[in-house]
Each structure stands twice: as structure tokens, then as C-alpha cells.
Image (cartoon, rainbow, N blue to C red):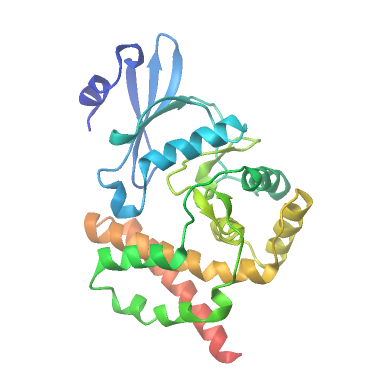
Length: 274
């Protein structure tokens, strides 16, 4: 949606000057300058269901997190169009510099304590969703799927409120604010931390430091469960990127797919040597 039709979809009080922003992989974002101040405006992707996104649940999750001081307040939303307006913040995201794991874990542990009754993200079900959309599945991915039948990769857990996409681009400022609630649901805290570990390319020592900070902030999680969820992060990344590449042809998606598959192949090789 171009600037003029987008502004026409907003109430009169939200119309102003739009400046496109670089960044997001699936959504389009702008800086919106109005007589009341500056805001961040997002227009969601055209087919959120294809990516497993429920815009209604996204809004509820964002509002719950904002009420707890973990996310920016929603100023305006139209879930059916994927429209979202938040305050503009002159702060940098966490793609730059070394992550402050203690500060981040205090926020994540607080999120995981919030009482919600929403559906649970079932990882095999989400994988199945992508596989159906991708059919026929690329051969390199098909050969890796039997790995995920192993019992050690399917630990039991008590679901908590999770963001499920806390990569470096979704962490803003020193607090940090948690951005982009598209995949929020109840889930395994281990998967949440595995996403963070993958985003920041944390080694074993840094993962242990992250776990220690999470426990110090009141969370409960074993190292074995965290390690069991890392391959799921790589698999879902590969499937998501494969679907995006098939529909868009953007090389970045193919690169993401290949990187995730490479990590899975390394993991498989390590298992064979044990």
C-alpha cells in the first residue's frame, strides 16, 4: 500500500507526513509526523496466515505487554489491515554492540510471568503448517526432518507467555522495549531463549551466562532444554525463509535458509559422531 492510500485508511487525526523506513523483512514501516508529534506506523504483510500470524492475537499480546511496561503503548490499530501505530523513539535497536544479557533477561523473565490464557505454540504443528505451504519441500530440508522425532528434542515444559521472535532487531533502547508481537503466544521458555541465542550467535559459555541471568531474574530453565530448542529455531527459520524466497525471490531469504540448513547439518553431524 502506497503512502496516499495508507493515509486514507487512517482516521483524520492520524493523517500526516509519511517517511518510509528501511528494515522489516515482511512488513512495511514508516515514520508518521502529525501535528501531535512523531509516530511509528506499520502496514502488515498481505497474507499473515501464510506465516502463522494471527493479527487479533498479536494486538492482544502487544497490549498485555505494554500494560506491563515491556512494550510501547499501541496508539492505533486495525488488525484486519495489519495497521499499527506506536510512539516514535529515538533509540537504537540491539543489532549494534554486545547484548546486555542481564538487562534483557530481566525483561524476558517478567514477560514469562504474565498470566495469559492464550493458545500454546506447538512447534511440530507450526512446522507442519510451513511444510504444507511449501510442498514440495526442498530435498535438503526433507532429509533433516527425522531429526525432530528424537525424544531429546521434544522435552516437556510448562507454557508461559512468550514473544517467540526476540531477535536483535526487535529489541529497542536500553530498557529494552520488546517490539513486533506477531508470533506471541504461550510457549516454551527454552524456545524463547534459543531464539535469542541464535540471533546473537551465543556460544555455550554465553548461553550459560544468559541462563544464569534468567534464573537470577526468577525464571526456571535447564541448559539441556535450551540446547534442545536450538535446532527447532534453525528448522523454523529455514522453513520460513524458504517460503518467503519461493514467493518473493529475494536473495536474502535464500541466504537465511541456507545458513539455517547449514547449522542443522552441523548439528546432525555432531550427533552421528557421538
